[in-house]
Length: 506
Image 1 (cartoon, helix red, strand yellow):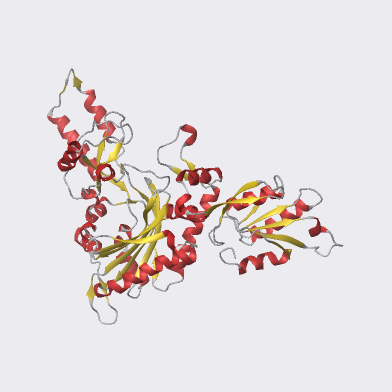
Image 2: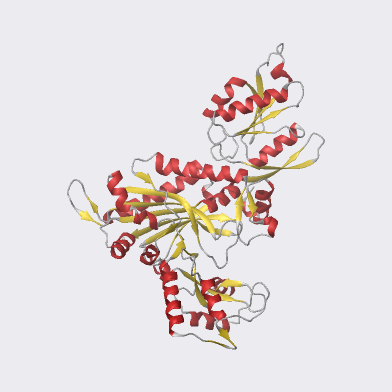
């Protein structure tokens, strides 16, 4: 099925119906732009992360891992620039109450780039061009303003913001609030406590890698160049999240900080770009025609970057960023040295030379890769049955290593010992660490179709011949291949060895 014919609505309905992704808090009416991953979704995510680690960590000799906390000292985000400048410009429609990113609103309406412009300039552009709300078609906007995208919490439970506000309102008399010197001093102390105990949910996973750089040098003594990899949750209070799980307020990232000498950045950058594409094609089974490279113009680069290249994937809503590769120079380590007053330099064990390493950062969102994988492998084909009637077959052609279930065990019928034998095979496969499914509900044809939709590469069927000691096929099962729908018979004891030999469902 061509991606040009695939709609996001089809993928959303499929993902929910098959237990990949559910709307968050659904029985309570839902919470906008939150999603929970169901049983098959958990398996698919884990397989994506396993393959990423296999390719970029376990098969390399220059990588170590880190698992850092979601909460961290607020000075980390001051050093990185997040508290001062990690913000998007927003406007609110006064009629329908929609909140929109101002740059997206203007770009979609009149195709004008407003990056770097002030809130006053952005407001003026919206007003002069009479840009209407895309939700309700009205023209009644608030002025543009910036909103920091970090989620904030506080460890000061005794004097939180609500408590302070309640105490102030308790002193209200008429239309005024009267405070004496003691009240002012108490209020000031509480506000200072609030500031000191402010904590942010991390908006990215890379900063803790720089913060732990010194410890990793001391404990692991890595040879230069080397990388530090991390998979973890991050949180961004996005103004306009959407497109299913493409842009969410809570997401999981797979990031690497690869430390190099400045003079080596160009060849290393090209190496990483090639490795990223190799992963998509040879590990996840992506078609090269479904993604392309986008080299960010120099004037659009982030302040810390000298070059950034995105791999754009052909999602149902257009080519959008899937994977980013940035040369961050030595900005981050320099900033953390400055704010922490700690030495974060690397000492060459051969020459004794000390220097602050530069960094190449491949950053990939698990959730976006999850969505791209569903889009890439979802297929629909029209079949004709024996009566000449048309039938739509949905099949998800996951590579073997990516598929949530590698094999499904199906008794032809529950009776005559077939169900028991199938359960025995199923239990043995699970004990061997093979993620197998079991299905005995409905006709065998319907069960094959269910497994095709699940993306399961192989099905084994226990039938009468399996248990008939007088039959030539005694002790064998029918093995069915998802993509070709061909069937063959193999011995029960050969199933595990057979699966160990196959790769990408072939």
